Image (tube, rainbow, N blue to C red; front, side, top):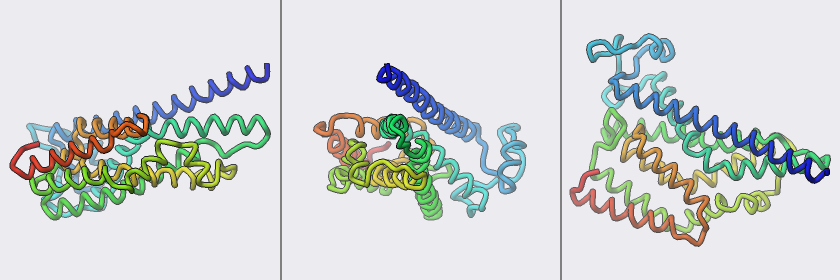
Length: 283
């Protein structure tokens, strides 16, 4: 009876945690789709206060009411930088939460079992929060990278590559990284969550320890996926097809058996694609 009760509790916990992760992913993707639609309607970032501008700005005869600035054509304001940072952070949550779900569900299961034995772990939210915190830090770096690329006129105002040379080099670099030992090492930690936890001191009972463990796991995921995320600068930071394709591939890399040469096959495709672009092909 006790075993059945525990199994029912674990099943309920998985449903609750899974539903929370699904809701977080859906909300993030809805924000991304809304932002893409807004950009497609020709809206640009107001130079004044971001919050009030987003509420008051409305298209009129193909124009946007109020003073506007176009990223890459004018210096970034502080509000525009914050807007871009939030965009990147939400996008990373939407892209990476599904691939982190197995690890988070394992943590929730072990945490419930430990609680039943009188040795509770820190709440699952601390581990998940640490993981997302790592990707939020990456979002800050990505925002700075976008700013630098736009100032160098390598990105268009719609945040896609403006240079065939730049596109080709990024594609080739991302493809080559798929063949490196660093990629394999980071991916192995993402593919074997329990091995990662045991290699880094086991599950944590204190909140800060769980937060740090989640952050550490996030760093390995960044080490595994940063080159793939750079591809957004090629196809477009707000290109939904590119965002979805990268997110699906990242999930496949982590869930498919390690013996499947998915990473290297993708690397070969990216290298070939990059060479084709440098030879005059178009995206």
